[in-house]
Amino acid sequence: MVKNCWLLFLLLGASGVGQAIAEVRMTLKLDKKTVVLGEPLTAELRVEDVKEPISGINLDKLKKHFNVYGISGSTQQQRIKGRSVINETMTLTLYPLSTGKLQIPALSYRGKNSNAVVVSVLESSKQMPRVIFKTAIDSAHPQVRQASTLTLDIYDDGTLQWAAPQELVAIGAHQRRLAESQYEELIEGKRYTIHRYAWALMPLLEGSVKIEFPLLDAFKFGTRLRYPVPPLRLVAAPVPGYLPVHVPIGKPRVTVEALPSEIALDRPINWMFTVRGNGISEEGIVKLLSSIRGNESLRFYPIKIINGDTQRATSAMQTWLVTLPFVPLQTGILTMPEINLPYYDPVTARVESVLIPPLSVEVFNPLWIMVKKITIGLVILLAMAGLGYVLFNKIRLALQRRKSLLQISGAENAGDLHRALLQFEGENSVKNFTLQQWLMHIQLYYGRNEQLVTVVKQLEETQYAETNLAMNVSLLAHDAVKVLKKLPLSQGKTKKD
Image 1 (tube, one colour):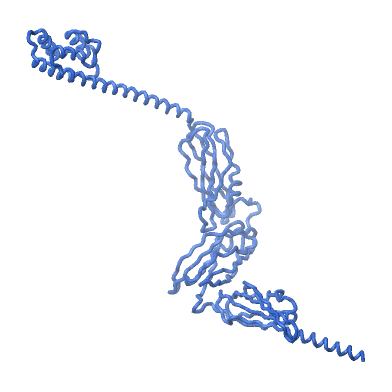
Image 2: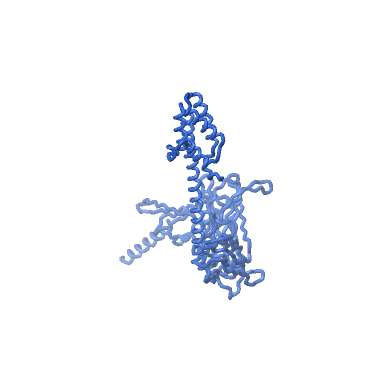
């Protein structure tokens, strides 16, 4: 009896476990069966009566044909026939990686598989434009350490807004982002908007390098779109083993700025030139110029190198601004040293060099220049002072003469005229002279003047005449003013006999 009870209990337990297993169900549903390349696809995986979280489901099978962009989940708990049942839903946001018929494979969970679903991926539709991708590299077989320009052109109808691509996957190559551009082009009667992205790629090892692009993000009316781009390959040719790593591949272009024709002694000055080339680094230029040495005529200071590309470059070529500060140590003709920049020429497979020819400048001593300037300045200052003194004297004499002539013309009698003549041009030393003595004094400086002699003689006659007519004095004053006004302002020489 007891044995029969145990058998009955085992049979009921086994049937319960089988019922629990049988209740686990998986269903996979899609929001649409047809999409355009770039559009998102939503897949919903529902698992009923889960025993452990479904987040551990392996999704690697999906990644062969789809990009798994987003994963979200939800959990629902309910009681069925007195037993607690947990249902979980996993929502996947998928982007197809190619066109055609793509299959979403069955997903496995605790021995159960979901249903497989086929999706049709189109190139375009009425709502979604066709997008064309064109990749190119200007040198498919570059040398090691020789940078090439990789371009990615995206053709659309102008309704998409593109996000800048992320970093490329190029193992064994150095990459540098270049400038972006956008333009329009008419192709077979249809207008396309072309978005160009570019990179400078420099292989570091010989052999094949695979270049993989990240998925490109675009937006249309707020909806995120994602597009795959086929990978590329380039094959890097080796360089000779003896070639130093700082020697560039390909000939650089060097532009030298002219130095002044004259420079000052013991004063620093910059010798500047521009180096533009392929695969040139700041450290490489420093090593290339490490052989430059000063001498007894000049002393060099450490080299300064800055990137000359003020904006993002449009090609793999780089521009570097090189400054060589130096100080001249001797006066005379200074000849700058010759500079050779070596490079490897892939065409001739030889090491060549770019020559920067030596420049010659005149070095002067600024101390002697300063002494000359000071001397010239003093001479000019003294000349201006002398000229000012002469001009001041002329103005002073002119004012004094004008005042004297006014006094002479205003004389009312012979005595006033006599005193006014003695005070001509402020001559205080002759105020006690007679008219004849004053006349001799004037003639000593201005020479003999017959008109003035006549005026003095008539004034003497008027003074000693019994009748001193005012009219005669007025006429004499007028004649005296007329004669004296014609005398030169500057003092003349003593009259020779």
